[in-house]
Length: 131
Figure: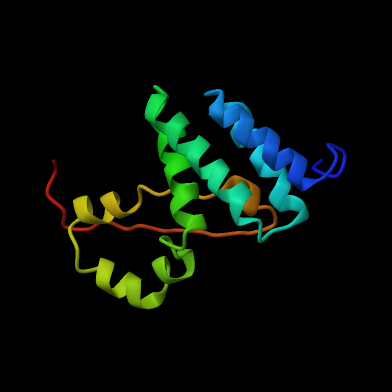
């Protein structure tokens, strides 16, 4: 898409312009195209993350807010899904209360990165007192 829109630099400039004009959704959409051509485009990622932060601050949807914040954290290396679901993590989690375990499951997956990926999570709760 960025190539069709005259290259990643022009798309990035338009995304920044949209962000400056307080059109965060348009900025996020445009800034998503540039890294498709150049995955290491840090400037486009910064514009997109700034747009996501603005959207997250103003949305009434908790799902949208959490999804956008999760994307930002994942892109910044603050979430490591492989480590989160490792055996060592399972052992540590198995000693926690169900409330603690459920609070750890707040993060969401990026649906666009899950194409062709199968992941199953099984939770068995035993001997837990009702809330």
